[in-house]
Image 1 (cartoon, rainbow, N blue to C red):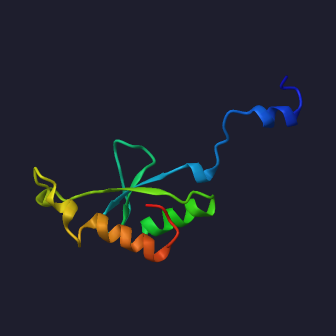
Image 2 (cartoon, helix red, strand yellow; image 1 turned 60 degrees about the horizontal axis):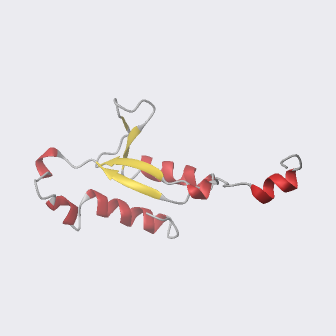
Image 3 (cartoon, rainbow, N blue to C red; image 1 turned 180 degrees about the vertical axis):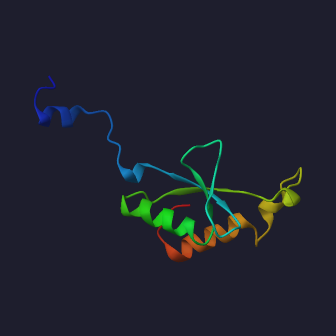
Length: 107
């Protein structure tokens, strides 16, 4: 039943496209990208430079969604996660930067 391309296409179960992917981005407050030792080939991106380059490259392939993993400095960490509500926190600044540069990006 799956001999012809038309039949295979008609009954295929799923198609994965770049638009189906979500790019995880690991950011920190510095300027330079820093390798993450426990994740070979992955960097913690400088929130103004490396981040924009990485997202622009992903968008060139059709990936238009990102999830942000900010590196909160140890001195700002609390048991209740108060930094998450800081309007000037790294996550909030990163989202603003991305939405200013790429208004149609899904964050």
